[in-house]
Image (cartoon, rainbow, N blue to C red):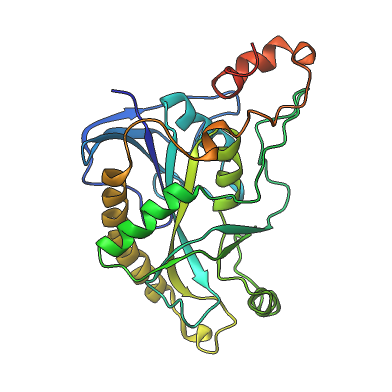
Length: 287
């Protein structure tokens, strides 16, 4: 049975204990090595692959992550849907710590990260106006409700560079702009998943208010870690529920054919090496 569903675990979520028939899959890709081994197994009757985004022991900073290798590895495993869990801060009183957000937009504040599989003589421009798969987001939202989480559907995720948190001036500005949550990892994952024609949604788990909040100075590391651990338990239940709700068979969303009209380079101008390296992604369009 091939792997169809991928799970990316963020801060605090380093394993899915409910997985059975476990097998570690180590691989390399044309873009280097992923964050660590993929753990494949059975979850709610479906074969899934789990990847700890920051590696064993949380060793990799957001800026150090090999986003391309991580997503390419899922593609090699046969994954066509990814649930990505992420710890975030909140810009709104009505989105308090321990709530869950399923965002539908991103705002990029990163600096020079690799966020495309293309280049080296191959140009493609995928549509990214709606960066989250609506079908998968709906499953995540309903699953959150089913496990009793306080969940918000929609909102904008500011993806910052880090590893430092925002300055007070930045945090106040993002709040005035109407942003909802802030994190450091999910934008590049969403871009690359779209290029790989993989459905992608974020399950954002709020650990704290960002520093705009008048009580932000009273937040301690112990409080954040405590919220991370509590959020991780919610995330495990939510994602397991979501996996069981994913329909079997063909996808009806636009993610499945995102590259159909995106490749602009003449096929005859693409090198054999690039064709080989990107065959899992472009093979059905470029021979």
